[in-house]
Image 1 (cartoon, rainbow, N blue to C red):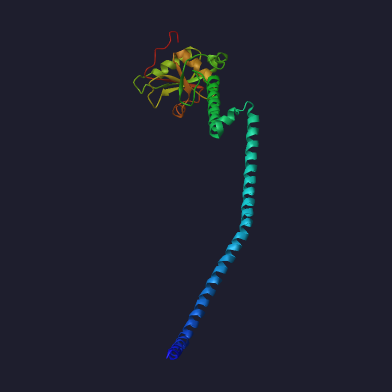
Image 2: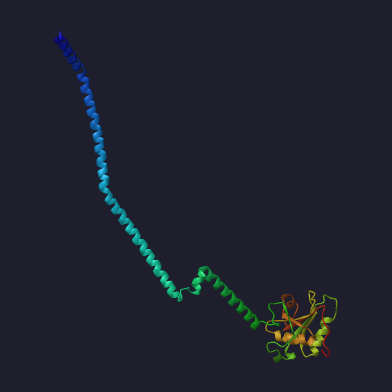
Amino acid sequence: MQWETSDLGGKTLKTVIETVGPYAGMLAMLGFLVVSVLLFSQGRDLRRLREWAGGAPERDAEIREVSEIVAEERSQELKVLAEREERRLQRGGDGSGGFWDRLGRPGRTMAIIALVLVVGAGAAYAGTTLLGGEDAPTKAGKTTKGGGNDGGGGALKPADIRADVLNGTGGTETGLAAEYAAALEAAGFKVGATGDATSTFEESVVMYTQGNEAAAKQVARSIGVSETGLITNEVADLTSGSMVTAVIGVNHSALPSGG
């Protein structure tokens, strides 16, 4: 009876093995495949790690080489700057730099402009002082004060001077030109034309053509006029081309006694 049970149990175990065996084999194959994939992946990672570890010293060498090149270039730049600074200090003598170096380019430009302005102002002042004067005319038609001798006026004689006389009072005083013309003739001057000016003159003036300022001053002193000036076109059109023209204005003074 016991054998039958064992036999029955053997048959049952055999049946179970026969039934489960194929499934177990399939699971084993599946597990083998999974393990193979994992091993392959791990091997690839290990290979990458070995490649990285093997290449790291080379990268360090490259980095060191680049760093050395940059450091060398920087060292050369610092050396050039140091030499330039040393030359500048040597030119400055005491190390503080020259005056122009301390000014800088904008300062030098301003200093040059200021110097030019000062020199120009000095030259203009000198030219005005030497060439001009209280009695010198500046342009045609502008009168100057003073009846003193100028430019060798004493070398001329009244008989060598021909003068015209115009009445510049605007018709308020008739016969004034003839009166002054007679005074000039009495003083030895030659008298040309007499007449009336087209404009009214407040002050009397003796006008002269170019180069006859000395003659105008003599005539002005003779008739008591204090202003002289280059003849204007308006007055020149009314004259006979004499050396000087006396225009008697509204505020004229009396003729000098004995004139």
